Length: 107
Image 1 (cartoon, rainbow, N blue to C red):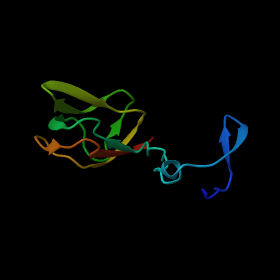
Image 2: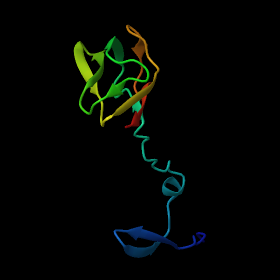
Image 3: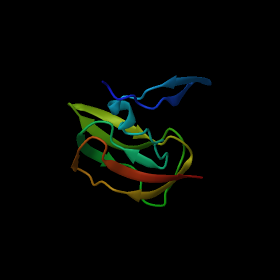
Image 4: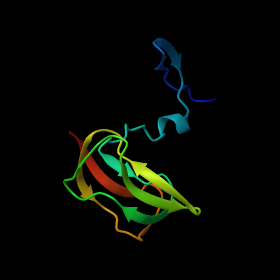
């Protein structure tokens, strides 16, 4: 005889459902909102050039650095008006995906 699991509430768009969670659902990695002050690489590649310095004020849309990946140069741009807090990469450095490149803060 199979063991009965406890029914739990599952809320989807405001509607409440009583259900049994699967093992996979109960042990999933919870989503974390990304920190908007940290800029990570979206693809592995090589840092071709860095156009900013620490403590420099930068406007939204300005190019911060060039990341070469698969023979294409990708411009990493400032998402909002702010300031460069710290630079974690160097020119000609090869970096993996999701590597922390810059720390920034809003103006």
